[in-house]
Image 1 (spheres, rainbow, N blue to C red):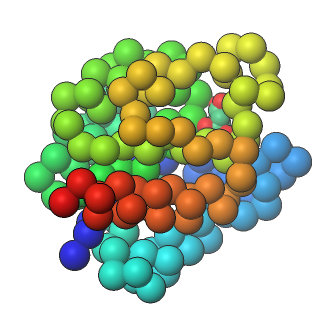
Image 2: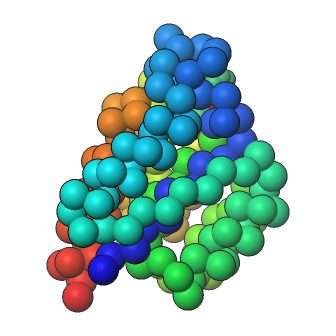
Amino acid sequence: MTSILVLNGPNLNLLGTRQPEVYGSTTLAEIEESCVAHGASRDISVSCFQSNHEGALVDAIHDARNTFDGIILNAGAYTHTSIALMDAVASVELPVIELHLSNIHAREEFRHKSYLSKVALGQICGFGSHGYVLAIDALKAHLDSAS
Ligand code: CA2
């Protein structure tokens, strides 16, 4: 069975409580439930983890190597700053889809740069919480075509 980790970074635990005009009104718990349910309907095991700490996200990426077939990563603001996360993604040699709720390219200039894009399989952004489901399907299709 395909196994996917959905990994969320800093401040995403606040989803649904503030800035709904930017990030929507769906909570992280609801997003995680929909990811698990969507995966189950397609014979994909989905596990979810969120942390506000860069090192914990690096550890989760390292630990994924022996457990998961791929990762969906919304690294939040670390997307734009973290060479450590970029190096972690490059080191595990798992397919990683970079995910953003908002269209980072249509926002402030500092959000246009992503260290993760250099090492990710691809990027999905601008589709709100639906992006996670799109990413699960894209990752599954990639894994099926690679096997
Ligand atoms: O659009 C995305 O998913 C982002 O990764 C979200 C990050 C932002 O720094 C990235 O540029 C794009 C911010 C997440 C903050 O989430 C909040 C949720 C509710 C209230 C406040 C912040």
